Length: 257
Image (cartoon, rainbow, N blue to C red; front, side, top):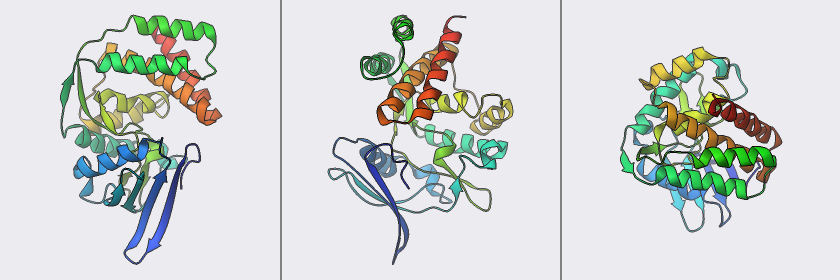
């Protein structure tokens, strides 16, 4: 069941207590730890109606988690990925997750910029001129205080299931963290919403508002583009890497306006 890009093994097993999902990874992989934390403390709004897996067992030191299996098929790559109703439900699910808690951070913006610079200092195929331009843009970023909420971290159709009744469910909380709410919209905006304003409108109708403050949104798109291109190169996902380079081009176009 895993994507085969990192050292995480995902198994779907039939047991005497029903179908379960088991995940395990190596000692340097932090995704299982994040997923354990998310399921222990933050999935409450989604548990009613089985909108997310229920935690059965977990061991942080051994990077192991066992979850119930939820019904449905991946939305990605199916006609459902272009269905506004799916995005309306995704917006409703996400706002319920975001509204659980909030805290103000004085250094979040600086930390996110530092992470972007670390990506640029590592291995990637971003050309030197573009890298220099990105560094110059990051140097101008405002480091104002930011409101952080529980975020999924990879909110897109590859992590949504749709069952036979048309109900959207959520999987894979391995990138969970406290972040600004708008960060959960970045991948949708640069992928599924491109050329589909109806999907964006349906999502925001479900969410109930638009959390994207313009200046913070521009900073987010720059960082997301860098992280996508560099991470995808490092794990050998060339199509996703090309997506990251397109995102960089788009972010630079916006920054130059």
